[in-house]
Image (cartoon, one colour):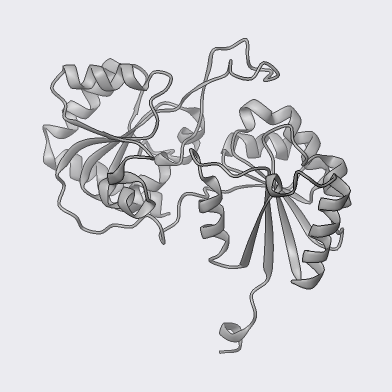
Length: 301
C-alpha cells in the first residue's frame, strides 16, 4: 500500500519543436507516464526568448514541480546543445533522447557529453555510445501495450501498409498489387487511421503488416552519410505490430536482426523477396499462424 501511495517522480521532456507528421512526442509521453509524472516542453513555444531566458524558465519549473529527470531531444542542430544543457539545474539527472542516430551520431555524441545517459531507439546506436564510455540504453518507445494491443478482431485485410509514401515504398507496394496481393494502404491523415486507436484496430484486422526501412541520406547535406543515397533504419513497426497480434514482414535492417535473433521477424531485401514471403504465408494458414505467434511472443518479450 505504501508503494502504491508513494508519489511518482517527475520527468521533464524537452523537444525542439512540435511535429504533425511524426508525432514521436505522443509515444514518449505515453511511455514515461507509466512510471513518472511526465511534463513536455516544446522550445518553439519560447523562440522569442534568449537561450538563457529559456533555461531560467525551465530551472524555475524544475524547482517548483520537483522534477528529478530532464530528457533532451537529440538528432539535430538546435537550441539543445552542450551550452544549453549545462545551463539546466545540475541537481537533476539529464538524458539525451535519440532515434535518428545514423544521421546525427557525430552531433549526438557531442551533445550527449553534457548528459548523464543516452536513450536510443536503435540497438546499434547504443553499442556505439557504449564504446565511447557513455551510459546508453535501448528504448523501444513505441512498444507500449497501453497503445497497441490484441483486440481479437477478425482478419479482414491480407496486407496492411501504413505510413507515408517515400523512397522505395510505392515501387514495392505496386509490385505486390501487380502480383494480385491485396494491400490496404493508409496514412497518418486518413480518416480510418488518423488516431493510434484507429491504427491499432486496423493492425488487428490485418494478417500481415509490411514494413520498410530504407531511409534517404541526401536530404541534409551536413549528414556525414550524404554520399550514400540510403541507409536501412529500424522502424517501430518492427516491434509493436506483434503487440496487436499481427505478423510484420520487414525490409532488412541490421538493428532488427539484433532484436529478432531467432528469425522471428521475416526479412526481405527486394520486392521479389517481399512478394514470395507474403505469398507463401498467405497460402498456408498454419504457417502464417505459427509465424505470427512466434513473432508476437518475441515482441511481448
